[in-house]
Image (cartoon, rainbow, N blue to C red; front, side, top):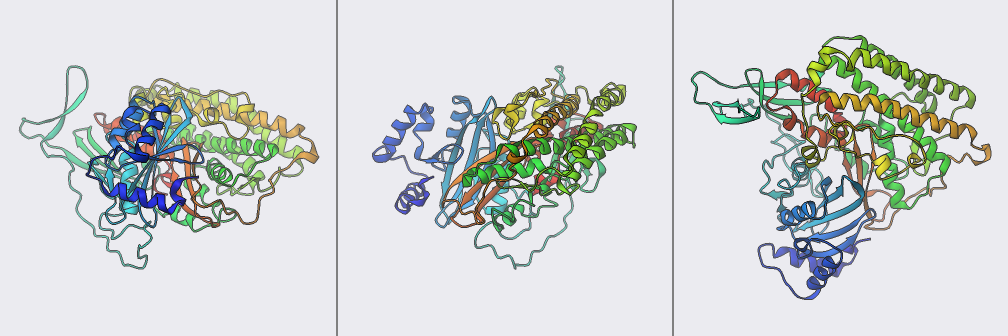
Length: 590
């Protein structure tokens, strides 16, 4: 629990925060906090800035001044090893706004710290973290867009999900939902100077320089928002110098539905669970359901039966296989540009996996199978037929992988298009908060199923797939190899479920009909979804609906890194690089 429930303490903090430009008070409780900070092993620059401490459900929290964000986060990243800014949650209270930077370490995601930055309600603004973590650029723009918090020295503080002409901030309590909005069409302008082009130095690196040659110019190119290669309603604003990418900026928000607000209006027990499937329509929705279930169960202190954990693990891995099979199949379309055998064969295998999930959940895509405390129902009867069906599907995976290798990874054209293109170095990937196959394709050994165990993963024999090529080819290899690991996990789950005594098959804990977590309880929990780390921040207000529901979509951070990977390459490489990220706009736009 945190100090926010104490009204007198809140007022004391607000008085301190209003002195945004004044010097620090070195006496009283502040000095005690700094002494405690040194004792906790926090870097001196961090300990000196701590105003107060909190205890979130997942991590300790420190409250800092809004004008010391960059100093504190820089010290935490450099000296304390917090190299992963997983999420930034912005929210409004009656007397303040707040930004929470959820920090983790890639080598140990269970080592977490919440950095809380309160601001005054009349003019909420604080320092930007974009100079420390590149991933904060989009997160802070989203906070500005939806809640109106301004971040000083942000490199591009513009609306992210809503049109620039939008009036008001939808997540504010005083937002007028009936106010008419006028969205104007304006001519797209080249976002860089007309004389700017890419010159390659002797070391092969690309640098933007002013062009002194006559007759050279750049061209602005719109890719999307309706284009097969964008994998959804995504708009890329690209600037070309000939065939080379000088500048590219993803333009998102075309299918933003304010899912966070809809979840905040739903009850924990019954009304939120159908939403997570909508964040990933590749078929990996069961992983998303688990993200919400894990957060809500921890918040409400719900224990999931062991049998239900095994069913969850099996179904989530089948769901992951759906997502990966779609990813590799459509990637063949992106690179080869035709309805290839690779695409048709991956769809064939995907239909087989989908038949298993349809038998289990009754749905083909929007499963809604998880429940708080377990799953909706047990395996279908007769169980023997379900086991036989699933084992037959798994038996075809090795042959399918051999076919995919000959058709895809051993294909000369595929290699020419993907090897050494879309390069994402490990440190750049970490700065942007990349996770999942995108991070593991850059040699980052990070998988929450192993590193922050949940479900039944820590009881099973499987391997985390890592490739160090850092290019488009490496990301394809990761997904193909992960298909085999998922099949291995599912097979072990089948063995366990087959032998489980009939009188011990408890599929759901005894959960209260109405769940009302303690007021101001809050936590951030994440799972390893098909695209990477899918996190949920929850804060309760003592009712049966959340006060704040924040979604950390993995594609959101992965897609933000696209310019780092594409600039300096060719137009054809841009298509291959975007496809290698396997973005799903449902978890980008929400």
